[in-house]
Amino acid sequence: MVKYEDLPQWEEFGKISISPRELYFNNKLVVAHKNKRITGFTMKRLSPELAKIFSQILKDEQPTDIQLSPEETLIYNVYLRKANLHKKFPTQNVVDDMKRRVTILEGELGAGNDNKAVKKELKKLIYYLEAYKAISVKDMTDYIKYLNE
Image (cartoon, rainbow, N blue to C red):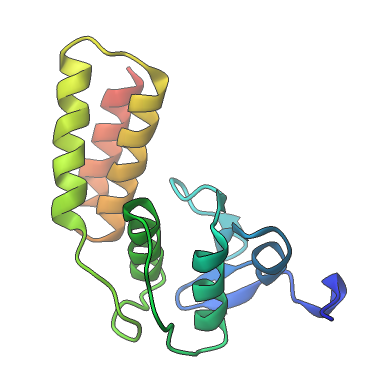
């Protein structure tokens, strides 16, 4: 049986760090870069399947039998991209799906839906698009400022 103290607080996960303790005991994905939280990458509660996949990657094992929901597929792909592990482990290109969702959410905002959840999802997608290098850091910053107005 694994004890809480046996797992390190942070472990290298490509270019970022991940908390194995949170992953193993709480199925939470907590990431940081140089011990600082990464803007736009909040703590995520994962399904047991996705937590298992991230645990396999931490052990430098190839994940097997990846069957995830669309939301989990997005999380998996974006976090591997942010960690720069997308060449070592299998990923899918989800940029077109993210852009399509951004367009839909922009339409909702344009139609007058000012629900905070819509803006929150839109911000998350903009951060993810920057992680994929689909937009520049400047474009991301400008867009987030625009959403905060």
